[in-house]
Length: 240
Image (tube, rainbow, N blue to C red; front, side, top):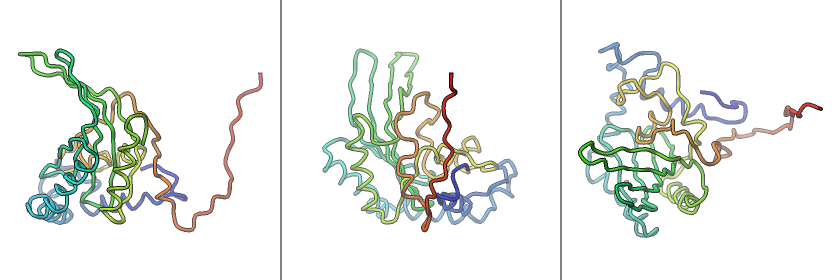
């Protein structure tokens, strides 16, 4: 991880990940990897929150229904039984022209590993190619309240923080990072990004165009007692 550690306390995220996943042990190590004690704790968390139907209904599906009613747009759940987060998206807009369907979606994720959440807007294309199947692509991602996503983005931040007390938004520049030696159980070691570890692999963060403030809500992570001394480097353009 890379961040200004004297100002921000993102180490809490690292500690949460370390409790559930072995760092420095490849999943190719077989029994050594799968015997890690954190996996047993993670399994309990998944069973309690997702596989126990009543709990899932009370903790997440009812939340989706509440959002759908208040915002007046369709909400689709994307929570999966082996992925350590609650997740859904608001279908902000969709239209079809011939074989092309374009959607604007606002995805929101609440981690089950620690008190963290994040929100990502996605402008998405699906092309029906007949017998050849479907071609899917992302036009851009939106990582802070911008353009047509802004109002719903702010709404979700307030809604999640009210429902899930003490949960904080993880900004893009943090969750896009990888942790060296981290092999996640559910993604076959292919995705070691913080986003995949805490939330989901639903969104491809390698999309060429990212819109918005990559540090959005970083101020929520400022260390208690931090004092900004104002000692910053200023780089001026060369004199011609």
